Length: 258
Image (cartoon, rainbow, N blue to C red; front, side, top):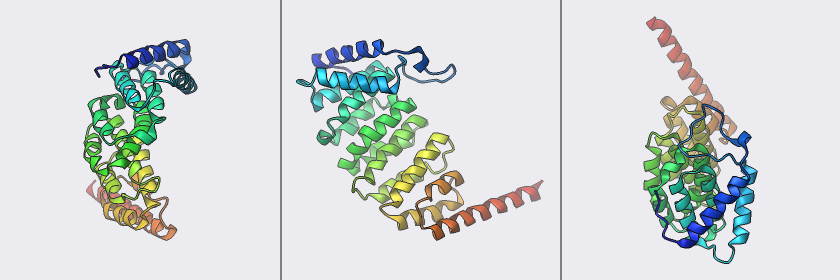
């Protein structure tokens, strides 16, 4: 559990929880059988955003970047999804103050990203902007990508999007991460890897094209197809033809072996 030393953080977290409890809705709780490593109060996304707005206004005089980081660490330690999502919203408001060291602090409690909803918010709204400040921190992100957790792999992919967005052009680092996860078959990861490939194509189409053709022999075809959507039409058609030919060849070999 993250240790909170700031009395202000403790006070605001209590305020957040009280506000969330008031917006709890049994219908917003996960369906039976849907597992999460985090506790879930049952607050809709609109309610989470409303609480974040209310807290930001109430604590405007004291809430700054260091305190917002403390809040997110504290919320991570409490392991409740909605509290973490509110804290992410509050920290994102200080995006211009992000520091590269935040990524290393996140690594200590990255297990909260085993929850896919938290992974999405944490990756897109916090980790991506932080990694963009210092791409050398990709080492931490690669570590997440190599874990068994689908959520932390998602966190890694969304973090890497910061390398190829908002004017940043670290295509090779982004492709390096795609390479680690190119054989994933979980639907969430297929979507995220393909999305990162499409985004990277916008800044270096040649690098993505070469990558996809090189890995066409052993990558997940679903990722290769979806990830190639931003390629030149002729090159994409050639890639898909190659994938289909390989699939047909495998089918022929399988039939011959029976």
